[in-house]
Length: 344
Picture 1 (cartoon, rainbow, N blue to C red):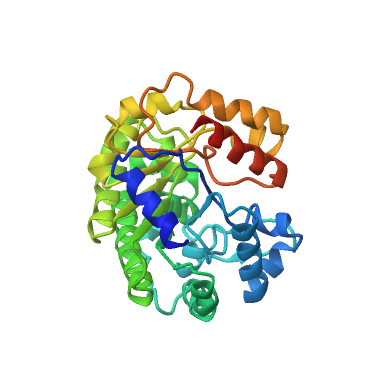
Picture 2 (picture 1 turned 120 degrees about the horizontal axis):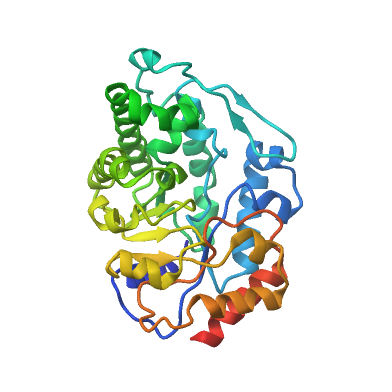
């Protein structure tokens, strides 16, 4: 991310109304390898392949902002691997992390990982250190510390169904599990910031937040996310949750979130109302059915519809409701950017 793009994000988060509605997309392994014509395995294992794919995306679409920018990640395996999860790797598919815990009784045996040595975490840091000179040579900087959120990681360690049931039947050990992961995430984000002082933002990705009810959101989401974001003095605290966002939206400001990438199922107006227009929204057209599978005309119509009737265009960055999905074409991305330009 270059300085101009970072400044634009800050302006939107701070509520400034810009002459042009900004656009942006979260990009990572589901989209980049296929779009660049390389295998998922090469993308994960080859620093040059990874760097060139990200560089190509940035140079192909300089009019938009790709977040978090040169994301060094290994799919959903990154953080679970530090807890000992067995990771399965495939040539053209996303990797998978197996469960670590077979019951909540085993939570007592779970150790807090060392973020400097455990799992794939050192590879994330080393990849960025090795490519940092080339990133900065392009006029970009590493601006975000990135991690999966505490409930997301817990769902991989325990299983999603088991975690959801545990919130109701194993509250003490469930809190112990989420608390341990939260402390680990404070360590992990802190290590990223220590390694790259240019970092001024935090991006947490956690779809499980969208699966809980209001009581569970207050109990298992708000305090733990507040602890993570509150441990740092970041200028942008972003949350990606493209499951249901209506439960968590009224709590986002209390959690410390000031930039939210929600499900496409919620309108920008609805999210503005639920957040009191105090949280910038990063969205919100359908990622798969429109951005990936629609025609350029479909994309342009969806972008126009997303802001229809929206009187206040502050705190809005136009995107899709979620990360960039597989098989999104250049033509559709260009159609999206062109549609936003017309709206401005």
